[in-house]
Image 1 (cartoon, helix red, strand yellow):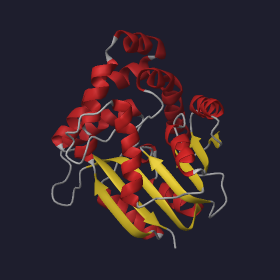
Image 2: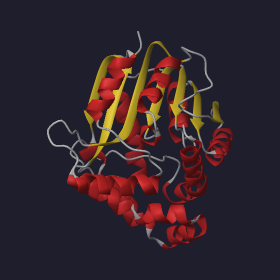
Image 3: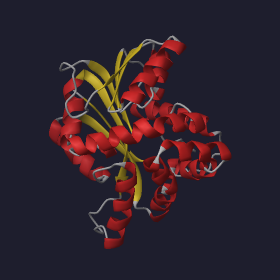
Image 4: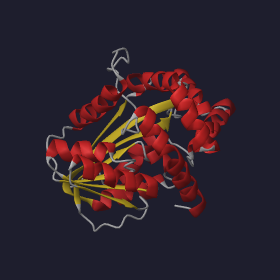
Length: 279
């Protein structure tokens, strides 16, 4: 990962994670609102439901050693560790996130390890984890091929890789337009993303690196309502005060929430799922 991008991502999450936790809680990812996106539910429950629906979709009923790639403040890591009685490890580029995740682990008395590490060069032995979990971190990776290859490398034979990530729409029928590219560029700028790719492109990479039993799905409709909820809650007095004290990059991200909302409405942004096994 280039140092400039790494630093941008680190600084973005160092600055914004405390505010996110204060306003939205420990899960720094979308929520699940039913396959049709119409089920009304409390935001945090929707985020937990996304984790449970992903596990169900991938057929995961047990795990012993879990790696959470892009762990945030440990939301998924601690949830999965407690659910399965597993040993969980989380990595992030943000020291602020890693320290907060460690603190949350101690308070919850859930055994988990958190560290600052680059997902493109992970400090783990080959064949170390039976579940490698990446929930909304792939979009930050400047080399998607290397990212999936690293996840595959540390996965044990028989283990499962699950990824949910921001994508753009497939382009096999209609290429991205100039307007599409402009809208994506704005999202890249405010959320520190190098670029995103389509789900079919991820599938091709997964096949190339050797994943087996590959499944993919587009859950855009199921998660898109999350941005309406985030926008509504971002402009409460407490959230506004937090924004004003958290710095310009966080303010820009908040002001650009509508870009993601509109991206889903236009069918430009997709919430892509991929899972596969190592044999």
